[in-house]
Image 1: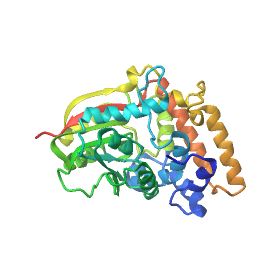
Image 2: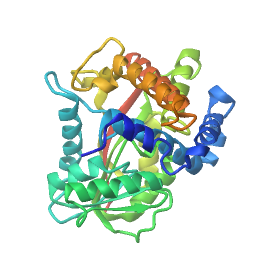
Image 3: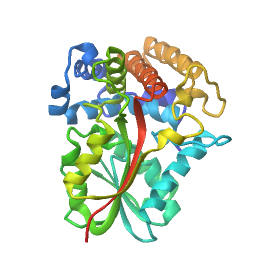
Image 4: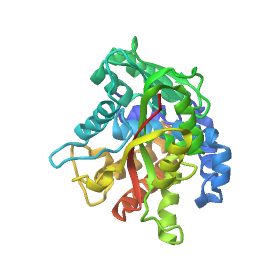
Length: 342
């Protein structure tokens, strides 16, 4: 089970960054983004540093609010957020046709919540690739507690340059992770290389939809809020992801923005007009309490300097995500299933 207490949030904030260096890391991270004078090309050129700083700073907040799986989900009426997240993960395994004993790769695995769920659901062996040392350390401990440490493992590496031989895995998936890649084609091409011929890659991508207007200032503001709050160099259009998949050599079996027919809006847990006891920490009231708790913990020096600023840009992300969802210009679940030819 994932840690979830206030003291865990305070003690783990900053990840592998020395506590005395957290404020400097926050300042450097913010400078990559438009709100602080940064630009897309700089973020893409320095994506490894930017994304690593982001997850060192934000992971304890994610774990505190979301648990072990840091992603949204298509959700039915009457279904809890936790149930929908598990079903979202099971859906991937079913679409990939994962069989017992197969070798599966989770690209950008976080602390391994989906990895453990899919491994148990399909009785497969899942390797998670992640370039953040703190998340891998947490993931290994959670694997041990879940009893899957003998069949599941983590590899610290950049998913743009994976340390695996060609044709290694029986299936590959990514959940809201390859959006951190500076180049979709390069990322998908590397996934294509390590996937066995005849096997499939499935993903949920963060994308701007066809409703996004690059000449609309409000749309651009929402996009920038999501980018700074979620460690993204850019947010691609769904059409650009599809184009990159085909360019990388994949045969696209099917693709769809699953947000379009979700009976419960995917952004509901973050909506200020929504309240839920089961996902209280994600609600506006829960986030307000967390923000003030972090302020207090930083004041009494139980949390490092800069903690409030992390809380602030995560709140900015929540606002951007809700606005993007309501306007249907952004989706966190553009799904595709693609096959590597024989």
